[in-house]
Length: 296
Image 1 (cartoon, rainbow, N blue to C red):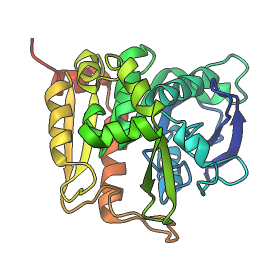
Image 2: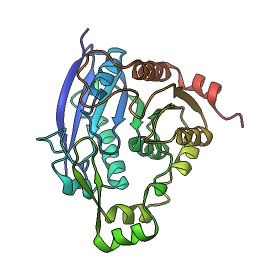
Image 3: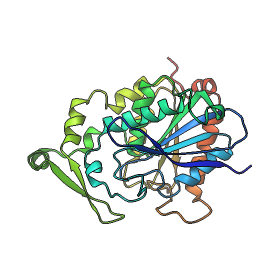
Image 4: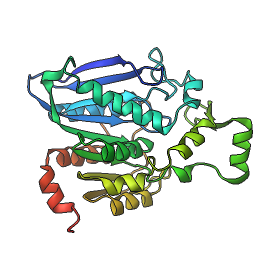
């Protein structure tokens, strides 16, 4: 059976900007485990091979959801370009946590259009890079999450901010710019991003969140990732109570994919990650906990 898709569903966000979501599933009338995917920094739901990943999960019997964070810089009219750079500048980690909560609450509404296709008691999160940290925090907060997968995830947000004179200059100017290497665009970060982090430092502590997890956690990372150090996977492995580590030889930050992805097939590194992720999600949580959980 081919998979069904509903693309670009507009969902009202909590911060005056909509979220745009896709769902991919087999329309076979069966209840399916839910998988929610969170993109990373300078990412979007239609980046590279994320669509193909969703199709793989759907063919294996999952109800796959991916979405754009409300302030990722794209718009409902331009889903793959950062045309709303003011929104990009106004983004922060708390908004992304709120966006993920909005998606979760939307799926679990009794009036959800696809309610007959989902198993509300089986919800997994997958997060890439910065989105991995968001998923760790949300999985620690939200008891309805049953499994967690992080792909090339960061393990700390605080260390990514500038310090000293750079930080002072940012506060003084109110904005600093980052170049999007793919498009050459200068993208702004308003100082509120750092201020919001400082105000919510305890909640945004990935280490603290990872240690509080009560669910199995698959940690996938490429050995040739130059964007996020493999040591960050080691941190998550050390902190999570029931972690499984998947180190992918010679894989980069996006496991051999790129944007746009125009090939039918996927790189072997990414196929390996998808296959192992599906195996992980299909394994009973208690079995995973018995195998990988802390003995104490």
